[in-house]
Each structure stands twice: as structure tokens, then as C-alpha cells.
Amino acid sequence: MYFDRFIFEQAALKTEYGKQLFSSLIKKGLSPEIKQGRSAVYTIEENKRHAFGEGKRTLIIGSRSPSKFENCRPSADYQLPVFTGCPGLCEYCYLMTRMGEQPYVKLNANIVNVLTNITKYIEENMPKTTSFELSASSDPLPFEEPTGIVSFIINHFASLPNGRLRICTKFEPNADILKANHNGHTDFRFSINTPGVIDSYEHVTPSLDRRISAAKNIINAGYKTGIMIAPVFLDDDWKNDYAKLIENLKSNLGSGVSTFEVVTHRYTTKAKETINNIFPQTKLDMDDEKRKFKMGQFGYGKYVYDSEKIKQVKEFFSSEISKQFPDSELLYVV
Image (cartoon, rainbow, N blue to C red; front, side, top):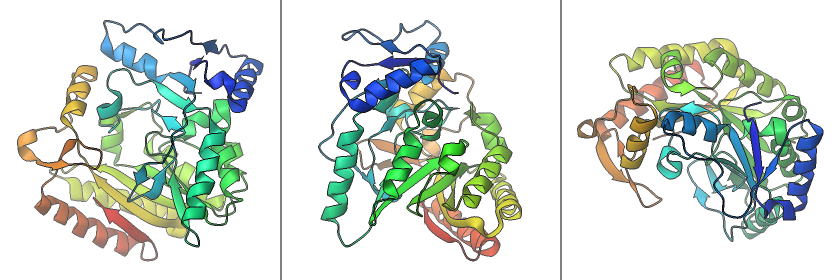
């Protein structure tokens, strides 16, 4: 289990799911806490990295009722506001912009509100299919062991003829997810990178071999399965490294991969500041002078690779993927 502390906000215990989860954790021999008023979850240590790690291992169960879902293109039509944060310690994580040095991992216990909104959006978009991203601000799979919420949502989508669920993860599915009655309505994508990137920057996450093995298990469970290669770093030998990665995927997954998505590395000024505070020895390439500044959809700017480099990335991955996976679809390269 990736969490060693569970804290319930008062509002969560007013929901039926929150009450059930609190009892379930006690039955598992855990010791969930109840947050009193507006008191801090924990006191920030002088050692910022230690405090950062503590936050990553703390799951806060709260409750909120968003009136609308945010869009999540290009990966899906809408974000599902169920999870925030992730126990992984990836140095480049885009959540550094929004969550900073207090990365509380949070679960929204107001599942009734979420499911009601899902139905509303599907009905408004009929007869088209409407897709929802569970991984917009989190990696959902670490939540499954203590809560069972991921398999619950998968089973719910199985009953929605025009609803589709999308999940992107670096982590391994448990038995409940593998045996879930998904009815072909849930797509999985595994976030993959080169061994060098994983070893250097993706701490507290499964190795490349374990992710590939997990993808095999998901394919064998009948899920539509894709690969997300992200973030792509354009160092001196990037083409050779990513060509080897795609060959490795071909050797191990064969025709089981339906789609590919490719995302190049980008960062914000806020994320860069947080990364340098939490990981002072980081070797991430964050030289503003080598990047292009671009405004994002959420109102803040980010530093991305310039247009010529992005063109090279698109040409390279389009060629390599079509060669190794002729029956797979490359959804986008950004």
C-alpha cells in the first residue's frame, strides 16, 4: 500500500461512501483520523523534501460537489473530479504547478454527486458517446487497494451505454480491477518512458518491466489498452532511446496495444521553483532560454519545445509507431 496515513474531513463523514470507507479502513486494521476544523494536516518540516514525501503518503478523504466538470481534451471530453495528487515522486510532475510543496493526496467521497453529473453529461451529448478521464489530476490505481473506488467506477461505467472511462497509470492493477465487469467501456493507458528517464526522475513508481507486465495483464483482462509515452525528453540520443523503447513494447505486447499518445516535456515557472526546492540535485533540463513560452488552457504559461523540435518529434513517433504497430492509432503528439 502506498499510503500510511488516512485523514477524513468532517464533510466526508456526512456522505454514505465516506462512512463506509471509514469503517472499512478500521476493519483492515488501519487507524483513520478525523480532521478537526481547519487545523493543518501536518506541520511542515524544515526539510522540505521530507514534508513533501509525508504529504505523498497521506490520503485525505474530503467531499466536494463541483457544479460542472472541466474539459480534458485531447485525452477525453471531461475530467472526473474524484482524485487529486499521487503517491509517486516524479520530479517533472505537472501537478507541481497546482499543488506545490504540500502535495496532499485527496479523494472526493461525494461519489453520488460525481455519478449524477456523469449521467447528466452523457444525456446532454446523446446519441454521441461521452468520455471521462479519471487521471486528469492523479494516478488513480494507488487508491484502489485501500478504497476499492477504481473498480467501483469501472463497474459503474459498464452499465452506461454511451459513457466511456479513460485511465492512465504507471502503477499495477489489483485483482479487483482485472476481474471487473468493464464491458469494454474502460480504456487503460500505461505511462511509459525509457529506463533512463524512469530511473532518474520517476521515484516510488514501478519499473519499466513491471509496467509492461501490468499492461499485459490488463490486455488479457479484455480492456482496450494504450501506451502514453510521456514526458519525452529531447536529449542528444533521444531518437535511439525511444526507438529501443518502442521495439521493447512491440516484443512484449505485440498487437495488444490499441493506441499511442505522446507528450513532450513542459514546465511552468511555479513548477520549476517547486522542483528545485524539493529536488535540489535534479538534472531536469529546465533552461528557459532553450524553450518556447506558451499560454495554457488553465490560464498560466508553460515552457515547451519549439515548433521545429515538436515537428521532429511528430515525424519520429509517427514513423516508428506505424512501423512497429501498424494496426495501432497514434492519437496525438503534443
